[in-house]
Length: 462
Ligand code: NAP
Image (cartoon, rainbow, N blue to C red; front, top):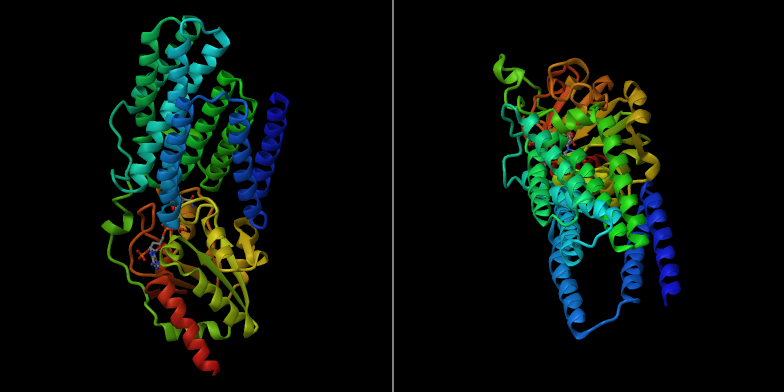
């Protein structure tokens, strides 16, 4: 039976690795999702197949599965696409709590007869698990706007945060050397829970996706430590994959925003966003255009680049923009979609929506490939995007966005901005792009405006 379990685990591990590989490409991401789900089923089956069941243990397992399903299924079905980041944060919180509690239970059951290596892994599991729990809960609260999204900063915060981390680390080391000191477990728990809170408090809106990726990494490392404690190889592999992929994702996201880790974690970025230069300076004017104007401008365009953003997701305008692309292509216009790595509210957000609308993968261009095309574009349609096209990232060193690579739509011949008002985007700052001579603002809901433009084109060609 044990051999069978090892084969099942091996198949599970291979599927986890393939799943990550496949999810790296839009084309194979669905396959990646299925592979990951199958790997998880194998992991659970492999674990259950060597267990000796009693009526009591069956009741606990069935109860836990039922409780998990009761929370997980509504979360997956009911939470809208736009809420996926906070849903992910909540899942990490549960993962972290589970790891922390398993670690504590293992300790209480076996102390003081715990070998040093196992005690070290247990301490790491509890530290990472509990800090992931509170950190992720805070991330959830901020993204769901249950608590203020702005960074909460106070004098000496870095010293408090680092001091709490040092206390947690020192206690973990102490416990590893003296596994019998039960009180140290409670100090470790308290310090780790507090560190999660202190770590997340000063982090503001724009940095939340990166921090969620880092928390993902911590949850994975905590699971890997749990694998060592429980001597479960698949858990070690899955945890290590989770830990490393979360870390790689956060590095890629830092690069996309031109930020360093230290700056994300300790920068307190965003506390100045409420007071923008233009909100204190003289009022500036923008030029508002109608749908008819938009159609006239699009009629003779040869190359149109659509830049989707969070507003497209909110309006669910992906099908309407795909229809516009089809109408324009039928007239001989070349239509491309520019994808910024942090457009929307989660990594891959725009890819997912446009794939759902059946936009050809060949027409989705990443930042570095599409930027050289903007000077040749007759029209850049900015559909519910804002921060990812803000030129302040290039030319305003005091802007919170400064240094973030952006889609250079300002280099297109004409820029059409479709949004509902002059409200800022996620970073809360004004956008000079709206005031350029070659910018036309078409105010309205992204889906409504797209649908009206398509209807107008159809009327013209009828
Ligand atoms: P954004 O800067 O948040 O701007 C979105 C714009 O969409 C808003 O200015 C809003 O203006 C408009 N909008 C909202 N609803 C709309 C609707 N129904 N129809 C038309 N327009 C609508 O979005 P972004 O350019 O995609 O930038 C993403 C930002 O989110 C970045 O700052 C990024 O760092 C951050 N972020 C990214 C992730 C990620 O992983 N992708 C996760 C979290 C945060 P109106 O209100 O005037 O319509």
